[in-house]
Image 1: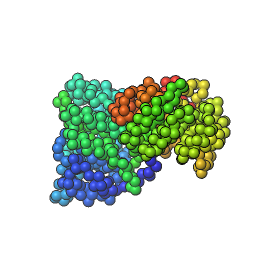
Image 2: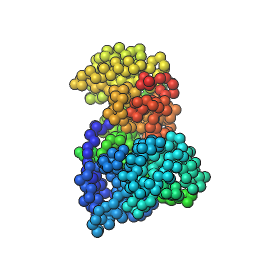
Image 3: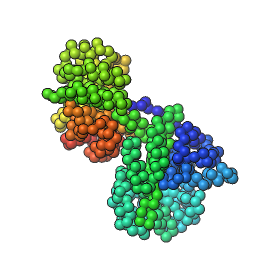
Image 4: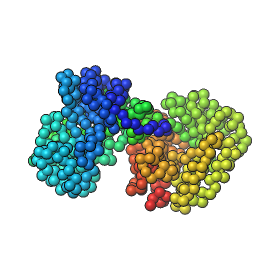
Length: 571
C-alpha cells in the first residue's frame, strides 16, 4: 500500500497543469487546450476542491466541458458550487475576450419538507424570478418523490440560455423505483420503454437521475448517472467495452478512458485521476448518448494500488494434508508470475516440501520475492528453519490467530516467533475457520490494540495485522471514517482483489480458504476475466455490517460472514 498523501488546497491552474502533463488527444486536442487558457485566466488562482471533464463518448470531436468545485458564501446552506463551463463558452472567451458564464450546481442536504431552507436557498441560487416561477412545479416534485428518494443537486443552465428551468439530480433508492417515480413527479414519457432501455445498465449501487424542471413540470429528456462507486480498472474496462459494443462509445474515446484511469497518482501536489460516473441520456424510448465524467481529485477517495493491474502476490499451496503440489506445476506457476510481473510469491506449507530450495531459487532468479508463511502452533523443525536462514535473506512470517481464549498470550506468542527467527509476526483472525465460541470480543480487540501500540518499532521482527482481519484493522483506525486509514482495496479481505492463490492440484483460486473458487486457468486469464473476481471487486460493503460506524473502513472475510457470528464491532 502506498503511503498516505496529505490532501492539499490546490488552485485551478494546478489541475490544468496536470492535464497538460498527461495529454489525451482523443479527449482534449490542441484547440481545446488553447481555449482552456480562458479558464485559467479567469479562475486560475482560485482554490478548487476538485476538477473534472465532461466527455461525449459518441462524438469524434476532441473537446470537453470543464468542471471545478469552488467555495461559495453567498448561497445559504451551501458551502461550495460546482462550476460547469461549456466548451463553446470558454472557447468564445479565449477568442473574443469577456467573462465566462458557467452553469452552476449546488449539493443540497435539505429535507424535502424543510420549506424554510429551500426558501432561503432558491432565490439567491436561481434568481428571484425563476425561483418564484418554478416553485409550484418543485413542490409537486417534493410531494410525489418515492420514499427514501432525495434531491442530491440543483443546477442552473443559464449560460446555455435555459433561463426558465432548473436541473434536479435526484437520488433514487433503487433502479426499480425510477420509471414509476418519474411518472409520479410529472414526467410524461413511457415508463415501460424507459424500464426496457435501462435494464442492460443496471450496474450501480447509487442511482441518480437528472431531470430538467420547467414551470409546467418535468421535461422529456432525462439522464441516469451510473457507475458511481466502481474504481477497479478491470471493472471499468468491462463497462467501457459494453458501451462500445452498444455503439454508445467510440473505440478511440474508450481507449482514452482506459489510459486515464491508469495514471498513477502524483504527489506534491497530490492529484488522482478516476471516472466519477457515466451519464446515460435517455430520450424518445432509447439511450441516445453517453457522457463520462472524469475527475481530478486532490483527496484520497481510495488509494491507487498496483493490484488494480495485476496481483501483488501469489499464494502457492505446496502441501495440504497428504496432498503435495508437483514440482513441475510449482515451477510453471512461478514462471507465470514472472511473465505476468507479479512481484511476490508466498510459499505456504513450505517446510515439509522436498523441493523448497529449488523453488526459492526459481523465484529469486526471476527477480521476485519469495516469502514463507507458517501458522503459529504448527510443528516447526528448527533445523529446516536454520537451513532457510542459511539460504539468504528469505522473509518468513508466522501467522498467529487471535481468539477469545488466547488474548493474554499475544506477547509470549510474538516472543516465540522472534526466537524462531521470524521476520514478521502477523496477527490474523475472524476468517474461514472461526466459530461463535472463538470470536474475540471488543475487550480482546483492545488488548490486541494495546499490544500493537506498545510494540517496539525498532524490533527486527515486523508486527502486522492480516488484511483478512479487517475488523481489527478498522478498530485500530478509530470510529471516525475520515481519519481511519483502513481504506481502499486493502481495507479488508484481499481475496481476488489484491492477490490470487494456487491450490496443490494446480487450480487457481481467490484464496487458499476458498478452494471452491478454483479453476484450471492461467493467472492472467483468471485475474482479468473471471466472474468470481468481478464479484469480489464489486463488493463495497458487507450486508451484515449495515449501520456500523466502521462500515466504510471494513470488509470482513466473506467466509466469516457465513458463520452468522456477531462481529465485535457491532453494537
